[in-house]
Amino acid sequence: GDGIAGRGPAFGIPSVRVDGNDLIAVYAATKQARTMAVEQGTPVLLELMTYRVGDHTTSDDSKAYRREDEAQIAAWKAKGPIPRWRKFLESQGAWDAEKQEKLEAFAKDEIVSAFKAGEA
Image (cartoon, rainbow, N blue to C red; front, side, top):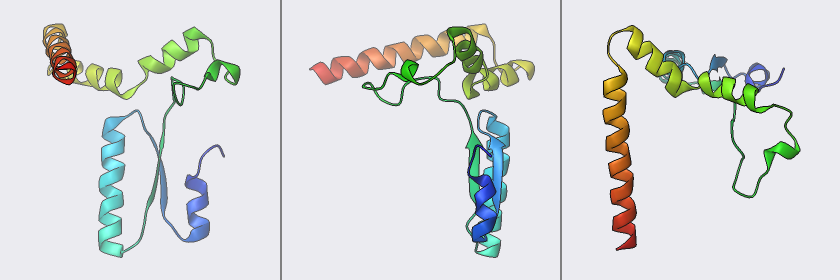
């Protein structure tokens, strides 16, 4: 396949592939892998499938070798772990637009403060 989880069994390593954008699935798989590693004394390979929406580095231009258009990339961004977690919290009544605005304002203030401290 397109990943590495299928190669683990050839080395006697239990392997799990999980949606890396699903925080609950990642937590459950990690918890299960830790239990197995501790109780059975075996390594466990976790493959967390995700999509890299940006370049590898500032000197990389992924447009030279990727075929996705802007709409496809935007769709992948919407499936990312942060938007998905926010939707989950909203569905549970634990998050709303007001809390989001406060968080973003707080984060902006923290970033500006850090820049000012770095420039001092």
